[in-house]
Length: 83
Image 1 (cartoon, rainbow, N blue to C red):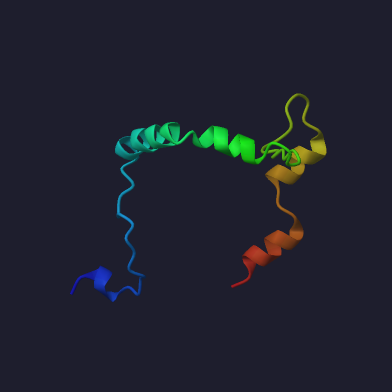
Image 2: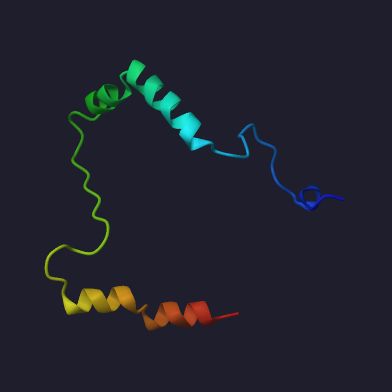
């Protein structure tokens, strides 16, 4: 018996491998033909600005922010330690 036959996984139409080097050029071509980027920009023309800040601040890093990044809080550590 195959191991994968013992797993209870949903059946989908998605391929098992992404094959991104083959898929990405086709997706980009399709999006370009459909003018997808321009449509998205037009749809959000009057929408409020959304800015996602990711990662530490640039320039001088405050000592407090480097400590919280490098060391988790006691609550998180006690949660991780639970069985």
